[in-house]
Length: 459
Image (cartoon, rainbow, N blue to C red):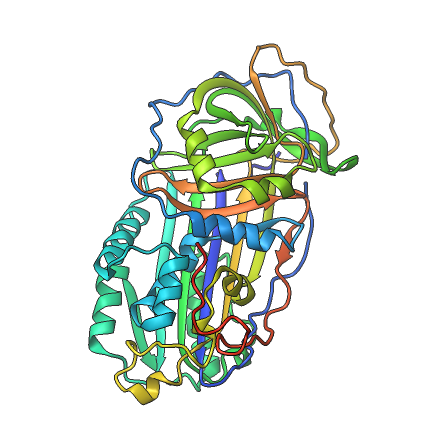
């Protein structure tokens, strides 16, 4: 048997924002499509594993409503696997917020739940970045943000100082008309941060043509489980029910371990926490009781219900079946953000006058496209190759059951700051790629969309 990578979870994400002279469609090419998915167990029960400390949920103020609204909005129209990185999007959008005023600033602050003062926003993101850049042993986390500015645009020194000091973002002044060179530089930088997982973020350099500014954020996370919960010899093939009686055969990991667990009557779902090495990151799994319950779960889920039940979690003996899964996802975020209430940055009415030194240059700045690429891999940190074997197992130890043999929601959290790194849904573990689809469409400005000039941000 050939060992797999020593991997509990692998993911990477990238956000590209194009601030263009015109309403130019900027499309980042999607990765190719492929397939994979889930159920099973084995009589070889793994040694009982326990958390080596008492779990206490994050006690500070959370600002994760935006994160869950992203999932809800994308999930309304997309039925397959999906994955977004809320913090990566926020790290890009907050740079725009720092250069915005009036309605543009109001929308960004309201939808992202930013503090009332800009100093409060800076303090929040400084704390988040400091934590992300200090991963514990056994976890790798790389994060970086770059602002590419065309030589024809002189950025304000104050703006450069703010984004460098509080958001650790680099400003690169260059000739953006040299698209092939710029694309090569971005691809090399992203490839380095994501440790080779995105070798060519920009496939076609014509997609950044006519750009005056590019905001690029990349985030890479790799974590091993805190304990060897999932022994390779207990991984076998079983059925994952994608919808009702429809099923696919996938590889399931199995463990019976002491883990933090709770049940939510409001969501009609079970919630399980599986920690990564160190005492910082954990994956949370939210499993509806029926295979057709994921749509209702995504509709009803919110951070208030989740926080309540995370605090009610108890460390119990839990019998867990979890499918191995690996997939990429591409999000074209303009329609999503517009629906949430962020519109001005995409329109001619955008007020990004705090970025450029001259008001004339500022008038040309608006966002042309926002694209995010994400990917995740979850496995047992061992070997694979059990596709030909199906084993029915009896549970010899009385335990709560968490058998993820149908669609479920998951998220990965930095528990020291309450920051959600990734949030997603597994609809079919065999699916390898998903996308929100159309990269660009025309939208009315806030002055002629029938809603007037006083759009309020989503609550």
